[in-house]
Length: 210
Image (spheres, rainbow, N blue to C red):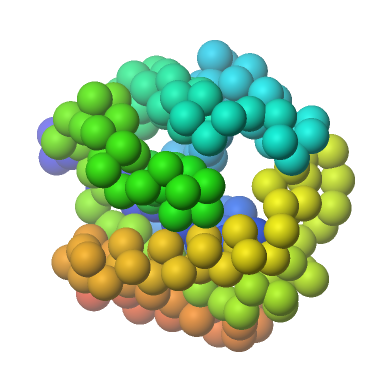
């Protein structure tokens, strides 16, 4: 049985990752490709417990290194319990965020630096990486205006400078790994963004999508 493909969606707050992950998963499923849509932090029972610690509470609740370690622990559970078994069964996996978010949020946003986060990722993931990463990029102010305030708004409440560093970090990740990453203009409408994503997934992974 052929291994499934692993696709991640990344980007700042309000970029529409969750919506586009659901639409892509639906499109692949309708085309006959078994697909799982998941998220980070979360995606497995233990990882969902950790999610509550990370996305709620005071902005300064965690030291940046503690935050990165919590994300790494959740990711280990996610990969071990959800992602790897699905891929091994031939199912495609779409994740709303993955390791690039730790690099952008903690590495760039909180200033831990690339070397520290790369070390954590290597420790947790080894050589495991997405087959394709879609980075949904848009203006910081527009993204924050789109973001819906609610119970899980800890990161959204961080300052504008933090969110600009996130955007810059994601774009640098894309420039460093163009073979894996594709930047999508998330400032367009939902249908236009969906069409751009489908085009990349068709071209890069040979998916049967409209």
